Image (cartoon, rainbow, N blue to C red; front, side, top):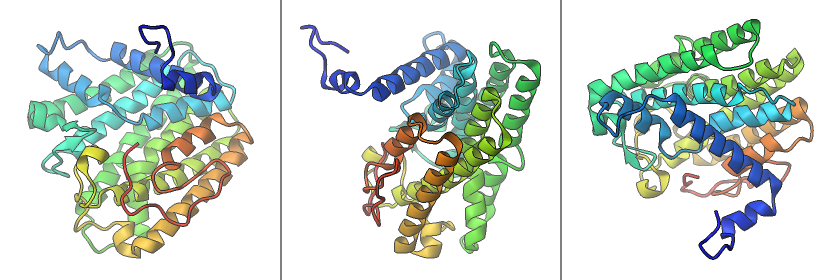
Length: 328
């Protein structure tokens, strides 16, 4: 934004010199504005349930999934008026999953995105109901998103339902809670795919469905999301190191102590190498899907290219990240 003197801030000048940054900022602004419109009005906080829904969804975050969906769709040449609404639906599902994940009966987290978790702010009963309401609202948004042919809408609804259900997010959370500390590398990877990969996967799947792309492109995008999801989960496990500062990570640390993670199973050095290999695979699959187009590639680069030296968009990957990775 401009200052009172009419001069541009440093961020404005940076965006003015880089059309991609300006486009990303515009996409994010449109997303945030639409999300606020789609959620129920809390009446200045008098409606506690609505306030909890809004607090769990509108708080600061990377917005990785909705932005990924919209950028992939653009790289595929899709400019559907439904894009923002569909991205909001995916983020509502993500927000609902975080509210439940933080509950005392699950991870018992006190901090999320730098703020007290929803059950801490509003109570466990309200947190559960807010999560259910967000899931319901997500499907309502899909049902009414503009300009979608009926057969395409049906595919979108089915894909999101599959993502949430007993073979998706719910299964991943169950395995994470009940898996114990002694699991094989393959079992850990399967849980990571369900906890993290499925929402990245549905983001690119829904972009491909909206763009009505061919099966080969859709499969390459799915493989990209799977590899990126594995990389992101390993990165998240590094962030959980109790030595990390919660004011930097924005959430509680040390929650993975006693859990089976790839860091615990493979050791620190091998986990860092595995992270690099997943990013290499993600880059290759993304190239197969969209060629040299840069929107999605540069966005992923911003997620992994800072803090630890990892680069994604065709640039060399550092051998290892820093010991303590921080939140972007």
